[in-house]
Length: 319
Length: 248
Picture 1 (cartoon, helix red, strand yellow):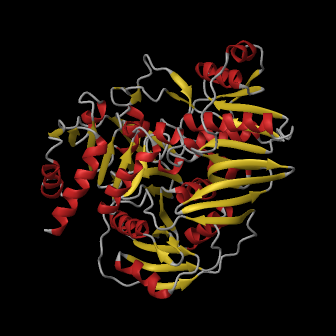
Picture 2 (cartoon, one colour):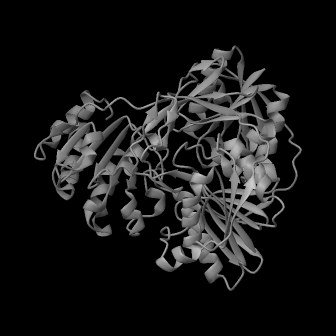
Picture 3 (cartoon, helix red, strand yellow):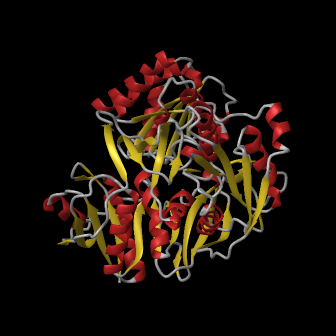
């Protein structure tokens, strides 16, 4: 018996979410009285694989090659490993990759999915998870009725816990057929913090009035080491790429700090960011609904407040 | 090529959700819409039918639900879908919905199956992938671009850290997200009139199981009031973020 966790790397280096996942899987394993086996697909050096042990994995299974995500190939690999390891729970990220694999694996293993979780299961008998529903407007408890369960964990929602253990590394030769999806070209996003990975996010809305005014957002983001985001009208207008749209139909994110500038705070926007640990709103309309769901607010012109805020943060950092 | 778009019927995104006895979603006074991502998928399907040199012969839509989902399906027909299929079953969970969809569409010869990446009610992001696995065909997830040229299908998908151009052979499931179409289409009066006469077939439910059960709902606790800081005193905000919220 085991808890299996699928870890993701980027060019051979584990993403932070992988450590979140292993930490989470370790707690789940404690709840059901078993240990954690981590799976890594792709070419990752043993030194790097060993890091998974420090977060609680007892065993690391490496499946080399297969670096291009083909949903069927990845699913077959995970299903084989899950069977070999007698996995009772499989933990996967609720990111693009996880959303591609988890549903297929669910069918292959006849495993119920607890999708987009932000905390540990509520109980193990019956196996019950708590998840957000209606895009964050409510929470629900869901019973997973099958013997094997799949849990997909939202990014930045579970603390990384370093325990300092070691893992044994095994190689698994997965017998998989050829990929049916062919990757022809890749554009890697470089030099920019990925929105889903960002611990701080500075976001702009229509209140900034023009794409030319985004410098104030980018400057503050740079001072903070934050990612940049925007509201739906801004991406619809083409001022910013759609990848930056946060909200119900865009990206759902949960950074530690979310700064909303010139965003009125429509219910759909707030749904996408309501899990942020701290929300700051800057808007020239004191009656804007964004203030109802924010922790801190400033009524004022974002074009003036954002540069002032960037300066004040620089000063505070230099102290 | 024949395209089918799987549509979810969801509460309007501005809905203030309520629950009766904390155990079931309270549908009183709720406006229902096509799930926003599915609506984008339908929009792209219509664009392909109109623009790609007659490569697309038909666009169908399919929904799992009772008779009360038909107004939402008529909206899809008004936007331009040629025909609709309703699987007469309750949408109990993602697995059951995918299984009903798989039964309903498996022998219909669809080349491209489109499904939104998420539903705005239960936010699982599971149906499209489950459907593909049940049909044993490829799936491409997080699709933000879909183009046809001859028999080739060119897809842009978002990966966690960039974008990829992918090709795949039909039939396949594309799980689509923001970017697939610029803006969802709105039905014109002519479309609404025509939609009344378009076929809406009702398919009996297959025998399928649910793997999950929603047992309890809870609304979040109200947020404490927002602490206001003067625009001329941003240093105070920095202090609060450092020492009170402890996020800086």
